[in-house]
Amino acid sequence: MSTLNNNLVAVMGGTFDPVHHGHLRSALELQQLLGLSEVRLLPCHQPTHRDHPGADSQQRLTMLQLATENEPGLVVDPREVNLDQPSYSVYTLESMRRELGEGTVLCWVLGVDAFAAFTRWHQWQRILELANLIVITRPGFELDDSSAEYQLWQTQQIDHHTLSEHVSGKIIPVRLPSQLEISATYIREQLQVRQSARYLLPESVLNYLENQGLYRK
Ligand code: ATP
Image 1 (tube, rainbow, N blue to C red):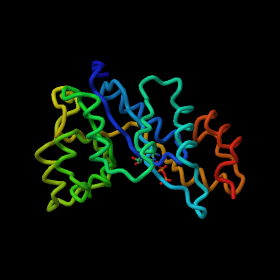
Image 2: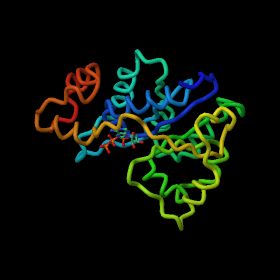
Image 3: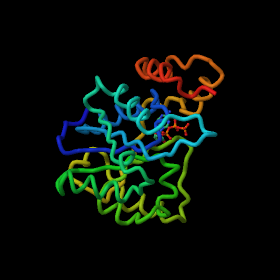
Image 4: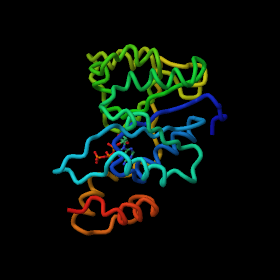
């Protein structure tokens, strides 16, 4: 395991509707593999529509808090749901950078499939001024070698052992040991048809969503 550095922060955004063991296990593995001081779980703003039997922002936050309460390396960051409007990653990272200061290594976590469209993100160059990208690779997924993302991949890539030397601008490919095939969609579907979702997500989260009557039709 790498040496723990107090100024190494990674941010994993998502809907977390609900948070499950796929999210939690990958966040923990990232933290341990890269020696991060914390992985921030960042729920996005999402209005609840009547045809989507989802949780509201406060419930998604509560479930994240329950899931991480005994794991100090995983931290819930409520800034996007508190804004109560859709947020761009670049503005979220600007606000984090202001808080953390220039010397902190800040990383945005995304899957390689999302990275394949990264240069279509709003102000992507600015994102790279503010943060590194931790790209979770998948066996069999290749970037198009004529793409701008492939160029970035070739020129900006660093080995994760040197992460503490780069506060932003670099790409760190990471292959996680556990890839749990769990999705929030599947959990919601199971609950809608009154099947158990046990062992897919923490017991405390399951108890909470059952008490709240969440995801039932
Ligand atoms: P949904 O099924 O509602 O689309 P989801 O389970 O894919 O939800 P999100 O909230 O969209 O969860 O995901 C948040 C982040 O976690 C994303 O970066 C996503 O790629 C990642 N992620 C989702 N599922 C897993 C999993 N099983 N293992 C590792 N990472 C995951």
